[in-house]
Amino acid sequence: MWPNLVIAGAPKCGSTTLYNLLKQHPDICMSQVKEPRIYLDNWHQQAQKEHFTHYNGEKIIGEASVCYAHSSLAVSRMAQVAPHTKLVFILKNPVHRTYSHYWARVRRRREFRSWQKAIYQQDLREYLYCNSLYFTNISRFLRHFSKGQVHIIIFEEFKKSPQTHLDGLTEFLGVESMQFSHLAHHNKGSKYTSVMLPSWSQKIRAKIKLPNKVRPIAGATLRQFERLLTSPVNVKAIKPYEYQFLWAIFEEEIKGIEGLLGQKTPWSASNKFERNMQNTLNNVGN
Image (cartoon, rainbow, N blue to C red):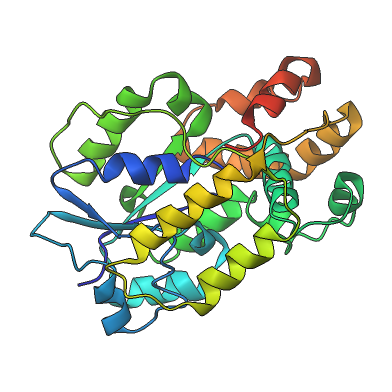
C-alpha cells in the first residue's frame, strides 16, 4: 500500500498547513506524521505500512515529505512502485522561501553563518538554494510522471482564498469538495530561548524509536514543550541589493513555473523591491 498522493514541496511554503487540512477529509488518509520520508529513510514495505495503520479504506492515501523535491532517488523510487501517484507542490516567492528557510535554521541553531555569508557562497546544492529551484525540481518529476499528475498551488494566492484552492485540490484528487475548518497557518517561525533545547529535542526524536501508533502523540507532546521555551524570531529586514541578487538567481526558475502554469505568478512583479519588503517579513516562518 504505497501512497497515491505526495506533497513533495517546497519547504517553508505552507506544506504543514496543507497536510493538516487534508487530514480533515473523510476520503483522504494522510500519514500519521508529516515528513515520513517513505521513499528515502523508510524504503521498505513494512516501514511504509506502519505510517498508515489507521487506514480505513479511504480513496486517497497521502504523505508530505518536502525533501523529495530535490531528491532524484526519491523520484525514481516513487516512479518504480507508485507510477500513478498524484503530486502536489505548494510554492511561494522563492526569495521569500529562501529567507524564511534561513531563519528557520537559525531558530533551530542549525545555521550559524550570517545571512549575507550564507547567500553569497551561492552553492546551488545547499538547502537555501536547492529548495527554491522550483522548475528544476518539478522537471525532475516530470521525467517520470505526466503533467496531469502534478498540481501546483501558489502560496500567496492560497493564503488569500484557501477554500478556493482546496476545492481545486480535491477536484484534482477526485474526491468530494468539503468545507475545511481551522485554516490558520501552521509551523510559523519562532526562536528557541534555550540554546540546549534544539539539541535535546533532536536527540530525543532521533534516538527514541517509538511505534508509529504513538509517535504522533509523543511528537505533539514534545512540540508543546518546545513552544513553552520559544519566543518570536527577531528578523532583520532583507536589503534591496540582497533581494535583487536572489531574484536574479531565481528568475529563470520562475519563468519555468509560469510556463507550467500557463499564467503569471504573483511573483512576477516581485522584482520591485519596495512592493515586496513587507511580504518578505510577513512570510518569514510560514
